[in-house]
Image 1: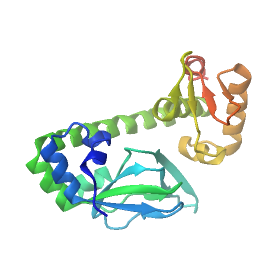
Image 2: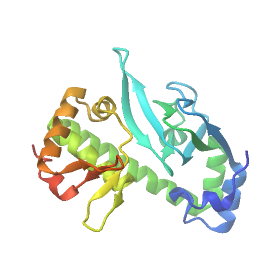
Image 3: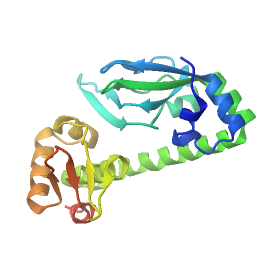
Length: 229
């Protein structure tokens, strides 16, 4: 399915591109609709294309030696998949699977390399995305090395609030938390029981609570005090 340049312009990676660059990227982009629980790609498959989420939600995970799945990221509209593979030319280091019905845009690596050479603004925005990915990885390393189990859960909730939540007049965020306690534990490197206990403590303190419509209300100000716990 062909890609509409106007829709492409709504994706953060491409938002600042010139009209000519957008037309070129759109011509090289294939769009595919995935049903829930379908794989976009699997770990160790040859990484021939770069992908981005146009609609929906995608979970990125790896298989552990013990046969379990370790959730690494949860991506929504604008999320990028296989960025590093495009640069270094190695197989997919993780699997990507849709959590809900989703629409994914894909560009073959060879086409993306050609476009980056032709359009400097695309190369620059891609470099910015790589820098953000590096910062994200550094924060994950910090969390795992220096924060307690509760602190890691709190940091993840703050991140979800800022990336996926809607801020209200009082500075709190309403977010449809897309993870079970088990999946949140996988993402933060703690057990499901620890996540359940931590969220229970946060609810008692008023840092988080459930709204009548089932959304999680997160107060980042109150959560900050829990980062050192």
